[in-house]
Amino acid sequence: MNIYEKLQNMRVRLQNMQIKKSGKNKFSGYDYFELADFLPAINDLMKENKVTSIVSYTTEVASLTLVNVEKPDETIIFTSPMSKAALKDCHEVQNLGAVETYERRYLYTTAFEIVEADIVDSQTGKEDKNKSSIKPEKCEKCNRWIGDVQTDKRKIPAGEIVKKGMEDYNMKLCYDCYAKIYRQENSEQ
Image (cartoon, rainbow, N blue to C red; front, side, top):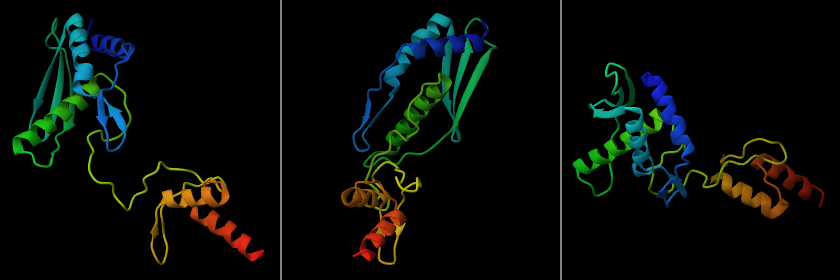
């Protein structure tokens, strides 16, 4: 088998293993894959398929090279731009280790097509008070997305708009539809 056949074989076998996510982001409330969740299975699959992997880093690029051990001139290279980390209360070397760990995870995730939600798993920190803390919702009246609204007096988060619509009219309403219903009710009185 050539390197591409071997890689596809390993991808399908890994997918059928139904690997579980053990990483937990408590702040944002989601689970994610850690290297330890899939790397042992990948190493077993690579051994069976006579493939090895080499991870390397430059200041600009991280790369994962898959090599067909039976034909070492057959390789597939996956790359990712390097990033930086600024973890709180950590030394420069610890930040470098964090970056390399994340880069490895994303390189293997790409190479073996490990599927997970499209979010930044490592993101932790304080909630942005200017952003809505609810998932995007559509208005039940006009079917538009409900977003934050800037009035003359203040910015109203989408979550507050949805909550008010549910409380007053038992519907998810955008600001415009809420205002229209409110005006209609008050003009009839």
